[in-house]
Image 1 (tube, rainbow, N blue to C red):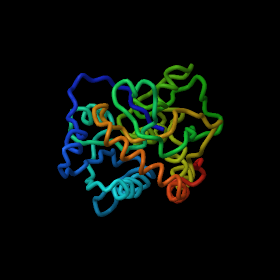
Image 2 (cartoon, one colour):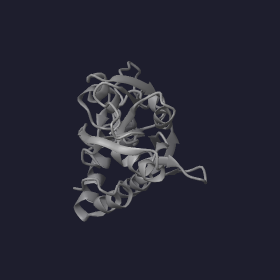
Image 3 (cartoon, rainbow, N blue to C red):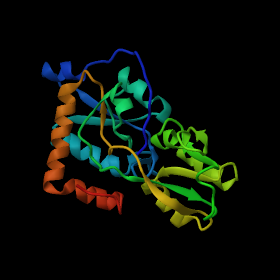
Image 4 (cartoon, rainbow, N blue to C red):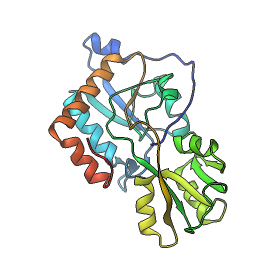
Length: 242
């Protein structure tokens, strides 16, 4: 899944303290709103997708009042740490680099494959120009390979780069690319899948241990009763279940 590797020295605002004091607090869920099927903005202007349905259910099980906030991907970690929202739920892989900056709940997806999307089945994936969204685990993978990395701020721009010939292919989550390949006859999944990351979790400030525990307990309850697998099968068909 997508992974942002950022460092920040901003001080965190502690939700845990408010929860410990017993004060009611609205928990703000931060997402990108631009990465279907995980999260996107629907025609009504609302956050939608797998993580919207999942987040609402987790808040209900944790008995928390929640609201949704959207934020650009490239600043989503710093704005969590500085207190603009309390949780990141945005298709983010759990990685060691990220764990140095923020904390994670238990994962709510298994590690999912990344894939290449190209105009031609013989696209040069090993030594060509490969597009990826900036600061993702896919971008890190490309930069460590023999290919040339071409980074963009949004996933839509990576697809456009392939279509207009700037890039030979794009590397992204397969769940994101599959619907695009099905909808556009000139684009197709090529090459082998690439397994990256350690599954997706909710990003939480390191000072908010109580909030992390509440959401991890809710995630586990959805694993136990099968409802999490049902959501994965609904929104991410073909992905591994628990």
